[in-house]
Image (cartoon, rainbow, N blue to C red; front, top):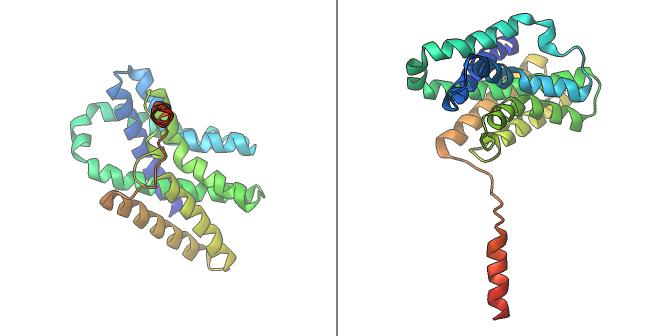
Length: 213
């Protein structure tokens, strides 16, 4: 199940990366690079941080062909892709949850503590999008839009808790995947967000000057 979700996810993420590159008028190389990093960047960062070598995609060159091909093909069907935005939101949600669970699994296989396993899941889930936005000179969407990174965190915590209860492995995966997908889609539907922190130094200075008067 996770393998299929992973393939769907990296394809969808590559296409979203290509669209972001297109908004910045990038050339073919730029589109290919952004597509690749959006799809596989999270797992790459995870493997480097955890010392998990060789990095996953280096052992599966077909992932390179798939992501770069998906990115370039987006240029040819961009009008159709634009009409399927809702589908892409669903695929992106699937990708977030699948990446998170895969990242947790990698962390566990390497024998890391639970907190590191959770971080491995989150990094895998969100870092591709962060790299995409940074390279496209945008504020990372995963840190200020509807619940996204927090969904990854909750999925990772649920995954570990269900394992603690010694449930069947398939049930743990299915339950974690279903809850994560439902939570992300609900956040999109009802615009759920975490409280935001807004700090504007000039406002504090103005208030201080007002008090002095």
